[in-house]
Length: 140
Image (cartoon, rainbow, N blue to C red):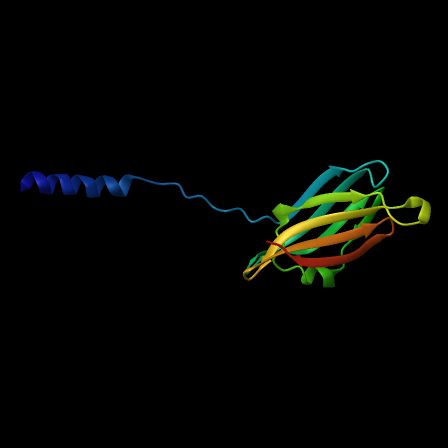
């Protein structure tokens, strides 16, 4: 019995001396992605954005594309409607269009996200003049 008490006392005393490390999940507050599209579209492209945490993860406070020396910002009203978009899912695509007909080129920024149980694809479209539109589509 004394031996058991000594073991318990030893465990309790040493447990107070042991320290452990805790890991924190970092909050992403901004991104800057650089991509190289084809020369016939936009060439070097930089996607820049600021985010802030909200109840569902994070939301964009700013988002812009820099291409051909021009900064093309996404309007604040559009950013507000992108709740649930995941900054870490960003993909940049480009399309030459039909330059001889005055159509294109186009730059697309795709972001996957979730609103409740629904998985969504947010697509931001830009042309040589700037931001064109944002569309949302359900994905499986």
